Length: 299
Ligand SMILES: [Mn+2]
Image (cartoon, rainbow, N blue to C red):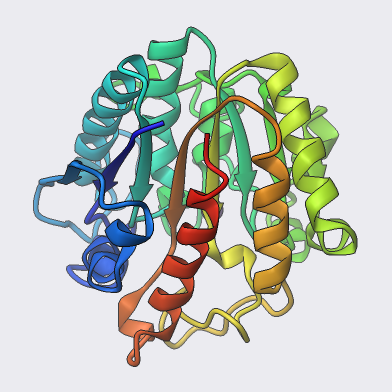
């Protein structure tokens, strides 16, 4: 399948740098070549970042989030409808609001294999800082955002819980501080970081098999904070300690290759890379190496 590259210069805190620079940095590190130098290659144009909560959902950098969501929905829908496989890179997990909507528009249903150090289903009114990337799975499932109006409201509920698999979270203690439970208790297929690490490839295969049974076409999303900060320090916030533990590179690669043994992958996204915490570019090189390994297995 022909790959289409979609870079997103978005930062979930509204900073001008950090994750907003990820797409460009991954490109400089050779992402396009690792994916066979696709002819279709776009870097989205977004509104200027705003490091304040916005009116649509109380979320940071909301105008850019809404724009990225709408542009991604249209671009992913067009790519999937034309038989191409979009590779969305940069920004954070909130971009799934657009990618999942686009897949659903093109394919009728959308599945999601979600690989992340967090469950990302914190209710909107519980979010302490307004980072949309803590809430997008809750929004996609329709678990939060019932009072939303405006442009993000129509992205609620795009994902059926049966068409979701969550792999790699290690955020139990953090969620407990807000009395936020686990998606597992809502019936979502979930394996935490320890369960994944015990048998990564089998976990990936089982996750994708579960999702594919509910939706023939499914999206593969990787939040790089699923990795142990010892092997991937360019995650999280500068000056704030990252969550300890997490997967190693071999675990993550095995899990993703296991998922890709199951037919139906319609696109791939990779998020939460901060070039400003990667002064020698080693983390970007590792992400590009992963992309090359996946490219050989992509449909
Ligand atoms: Mn995430």
